[in-house]
Length: 319
Image (cartoon, rainbow, N blue to C red; front, top):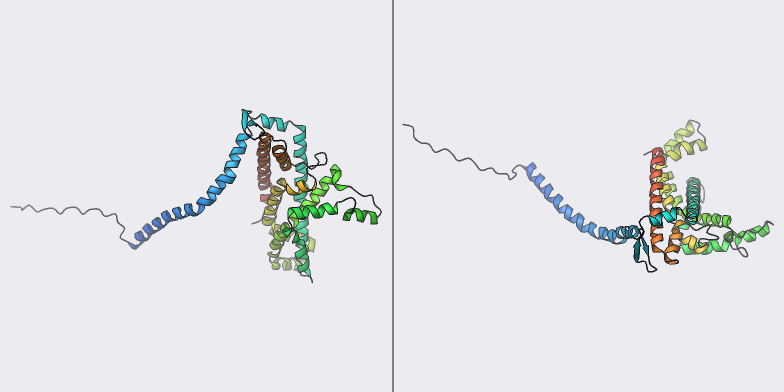
């Protein structure tokens, strides 16, 4: 007779990793989970500050721009896009927009061109070149108020350097800050002078990082210095030029201090840039709704120009 043999019970499935590889994988997952908490812990204060001082003001500005406001900035009547339509059909605002674009293009082009020229000259190994490098970059340590006082003295029609030079050369004295055309030129010169130190240092570092072997090979091949500059230096520092162009253009759109201290938007609104107009509408006229709409329009304009730079200039960048 066959005896009943008890069948062995099936072993319970053990999902606990037993191999060293599985154990190490479990530890990695545990560390990754901890890293998320550490990341939240360290990023939390920064995200909170950004939310309080960047994102909330942006949303609040957009909200106010859709209303009419009282003199204290409280919203009263919903206006929709009325503030935007009123601005974009205003000859005064369009004049400020045109003045701003002229100023931005002039400052951006002159700052990059002069910075590139000075950086190229300062990259040469000449006796005493370190002194010139220090002088070219000295404007980085000058505050806006000091620069404004310095250039107000230079443009002074009575005792300024330019008036004394005109008298010495027997030329007519120009009252730079009281004539619309010359006031814009004066503000552009002052802004370029202020921005030149930073642009010069950045471009100088880029030029000095170009391998000398490229220039040596070009010299052996008979290439002239001008050809080397446009076909070796410019392509090699194109990422830095791209960065400087974006920074300079955005900074030019946001220029405020020099305009406030030198011309205050005058004469006859010849230097009334968009940023200074926002300041005057908000804190002089008390029209916070219109100033908010102007801020949103300026943000959109800066974003569009930055996107345009990426679309056009980034194609010419050699990484």
